[in-house]
Length: 249
Image (tube, rainbow, N blue to C red; front, side, top):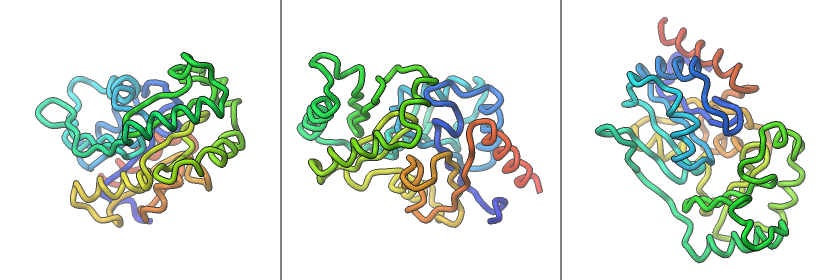
């Protein structure tokens, strides 16, 4: 694959640009800033936009030019573009209120979450519902040990997914399950982004840490975009440096 001809670079967030729910390193942000000075860069994650602000955008210098940076929160259910000093919504897919209420109820019942404790484990993101098996604010080291073979979450999805034909269930991060409208996933987000910027699939590259079968980046492969696996944030920095060197040739 010739990365020199790519004009759109799409990155996963947790496990790729940062550790799970950990702010981006300043040197990674600086490298990305150099990349989106010349190329279109997008970041896609199950996180809501407010989490992007804390975990991702806060790491950039005040001089960063976001004109060529795009954000895809809630697993691609939303696209944001920086316009006139603010992150404007280009599109936003939503789960109907009654369906969100029902899925939250069924998650709580299946996970045996007591009444009043739902918000510690279930995050209602409008376009997505996320269930975190250890709790939304669990420490990173605990998350790493929670479901390393993903069996707990696969079993959970197998039990709840048949109840909701209108929804898609995906594993997210290290310990969570992301639930979106049927057909809305990272492949959907990739295609919508490329449509918006006027680029072909052949002109884009997706970088993620969980591209394996059942991984939370696997859906991106279904879009047909070229993919590149990373082992984590440290390797991703090297990958971005390679992109920058290719661009200089």
